[in-house]
Amino acid sequence: MTKAAKKSLPTRITRAIRAQVPRKTARDLWNRLRFGAGAPQSDECLWVDPMAVNHVYSGGKTFPLRRHNSGQVIPGDWDLSRLPLPESDKALSCRLHFVEGVPWSETPIYHRLKAEILAGGRPDGLKDLDALDRRYARLDKLWSYAKREGLRPRSETPESYRREHGGVLVHIARDGTLMRSGGAAHRFAIARLLQLPKIPAQIGAIHPGALEAGHLASLRQPPEMPRG
Image (tube, rainbow, N blue to C red; front, side, top):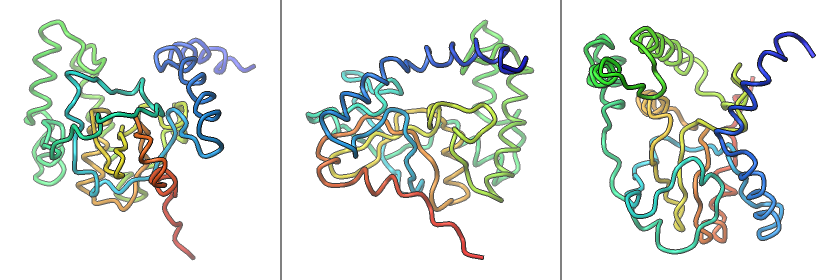
C-alpha cells in the first residue's frame, strides 16, 4: 500500500460511515431478494434529463427523505407530496453569476453563507471565508468543464465517491416523476443553465409502482456517445 493510499484510508472509512454504507449494503441485499437482479441499489447512478426534473418533494416535515434513503423502496402515498420546483437561492445565484456576470461575492447565496460563517456556523461544511471562496472557484471550473464535456459520475472524480453518493439527489414517484429534495444544488443549477441532455444523479427513494412500470430501467440508460 502506498503512502498516499494509507493516508486516504481513514478518510475513506469516515466517508463510508457518514454515508451509512453498512446500512445501505444490507438494504441492497434485501432489495435483491425482493426484486431480483433489477433491484435498485443504494447510491446508484441514474441518468436524467435535468430539464425534465420540475418537481420538489414537499413531504419532508412529516416524512423526511434524504440521502440515507437512497435505493429504499417505499410504498404508500409519500410520492404524491410534490410541488413545482422553485428557484432556490443557489440556483438564482448561479444564474446571476454564469449568465448575467454578477461576481459570486454579490450573489444571494454568497451573502447568506458568509453571514452564517461570520456568526460561527459551518454551512455546507464551510469553516471560513477562504473555504467559501475556494468553493466558488471550484464551481467556476465545474462550469467550464460541464460546458465542454457535460457532468461525469461522482465515482469517476478524483475523490472516488461510492457510486453516485453526494450527487444530484432525485426521488422517483410511481408515475416516474423525479422529485428533488436537496443535494448538489449547484451542480443541478449548472446542468439546467447549460441545458445538458443527461446528467448523472443519485437515486433517492423509489415507489414500488415505479419499479413495476419500468421507470428505473429507463433511468439507468447512459447517454449515447457521439460517433466519430
